[in-house]
Length: 218
Image (cartoon, rainbow, N blue to C red; front, side, top):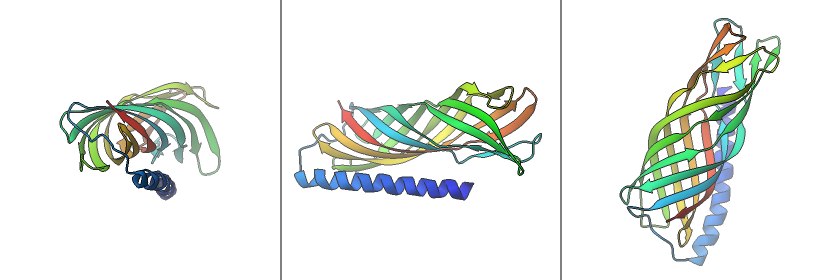
């Protein structure tokens, strides 16, 4: 399962990189004037994000393991530059996932669940005066699980909780305040799951978030 998720993650990165390379080459050829990153800037981005769980879902009460499918969502994020190089980013987006349980001999339908995972990261931006500006970041996450549909079960409940996040990405200035963005996040997320009010499972979801989008800086 981890190998399959890793392959999907690699494919997602390759697709995003190819898309960005095409746009970046065109923009670079035009050599348009662009706004550099500076203290006091507010950056708003809209991204398309692939949410790819790298899950490990097991139970001491039920044989087998769980599987959580991927989702692809729109996302909005807001960044504030404290200095030319240091920024705080807050993301907002929600995803929906199908959940199955493979017992080895059969597959059980645990329905669907939605996740709302607001994440705050502190970032360090390199080469802020250049058109191409990479960054790295780390921060905290709190995930709300809601709108649970139990599938063939009577009930399925997920506990909300805190997690940690790491990220890396880059902005490529297009023209004026506009920029192209590619971003990868890893969220370390663990939740306790209760099925039919009695069966307990531990779910390490640990999703990858692969995003590509555009930004506007004020």
